[in-house]
Image: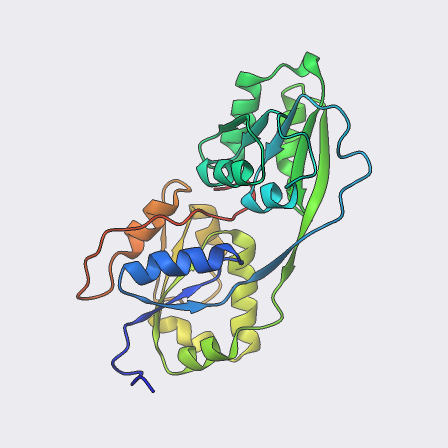
Length: 260
């Protein structure tokens, strides 16, 4: 059995699967030990009866929305994706005409305004349960008719994995990564539920945006760092290599709804 004292310092990874494993691989490449703690469980939902009605374009504010629509719509339908990761996921789901925005809901709305014409028909906005209302309102404010349809559910995890709880109690974690405000809030609730609030005093929190960082302010993190823009390579650059390590930074693709 490995001696925990000699293992690399650990990083708590709160992203939902399947992206959690992807981020874990990028963190491991930096010399850290990943501790998996997906805050959300994603599940595709049955398609709405009118999902395939004629639409000018499909808007995808998350990778999970792209995955949920695999095989359910005309693959030639024009797609606007929130960023490069979601564009790649849409391609994997079979779509062929894809244009990426620059990583968040605001740039997705701006891309729609630049590329599409409100007079040419409605937009289909595919979202997770509880997400996308602000983006739909922004698009309507630009004159578009928007059909917002929920294609997947993102449910809070019931608890932290046993192995992760044990590692946190041993003080193994030195950092935690957060890619959405909701994941940040749920993770903190799970830490409280497990009696692990004090463990964060030895951990720096790394957030994909200032908005996510603000969701972390209620716990005594050693420090809270945020990227200026929602860019996953910038998040890994903030984390940096584990002490004594200096490998090339890999780039995980974010999962966050409307903010890639």
